[in-house]
Picture 1 (cartoon, rainbow, N blue to C red):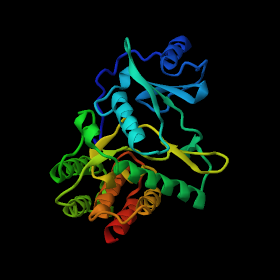
Picture 2: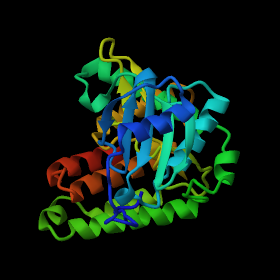
Picture 3: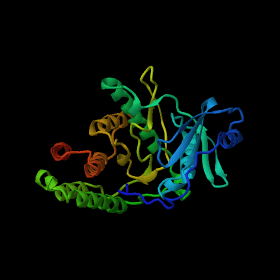
Picture 4: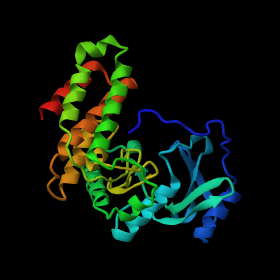
Amino acid sequence: MAYTDTYSQPDAADPVLSEERVLGLARAAAPSVSRVTAVDETGGEARAYICDQGVVVKTQRPPRLRPRTSLEKEALILDRIADQVSLPVPRVLGYGRDGDVEYLVMTQIPGLALEGATLAGSARMAVLEALGATLRRIHQLDQTDMVGSGLVPGDSSAADLRRRLTAGFDDTIAALGTDPRWADAIDLPLVAAQCLARLPSEISPVVLHSNPGPEHCFVDVASGDFTGLIDFGDAYRSHPALDVRSWVSVDDSRHMLHGYRSLGPLPQDFEQVWRAGLLLTEFRLAARGHREPAALASTVAELLES
């Protein structure tokens, strides 16, 4: 949950691969692929080449290479999910490096990202609840291979969690402190202290998706049903409650939590960590200009009082 990213080679060339080269990568894993139908650059760190036969070739964009993102990590996690449970996530067909290109070949999740769908009300709620239930099943996977791989960074203890959240609050409070409107509306250090005081003394870290929001949650455009979750390249290990959140709204996160809870009672202290993660997300959105003081003050009061 670092506030900023450092890209290791920001000046590297970032060419779109030729169709011939993409098809060569795809056919090594899926021989029936015959053409590239679209190029999707909305992911930022990666570029996705959409092929026929329901195949996607995902490549790392060289100037967007950063420590927390890894196609190798994504391939590992998707493979471990496939080994243990049937879930609507991409299935890995191949992973490797071809010269200067790191690539992942996988199946395509059908439908449209929720952020681009015209779902509202109960239909949107149902999708977010299905997403929350999917996250819980992912968190319940055996973690041994993923932890042992050394590919998934993150927290190993409650102390790690506390240090990371403390740093996140400190960063955002410093950013917001330059605007006097925030000091008038909210005692930001007090809110951070209250959140940190409620963190558990022990945790059992799991592999988290990291950003299971509307841009990575897919739906069927005709029925409105949840069809799957994509993009595990930023996965890290920490308390599972930190995964049950959306950068869009607190209400989205509440619906995700409802779906998560549908598979059984929440572990002790789960909601305390969930609220801390939500409030840190709201602080960060405020620091980026996406929240106003009065609105954030209302959200803070509601979450802390509950």
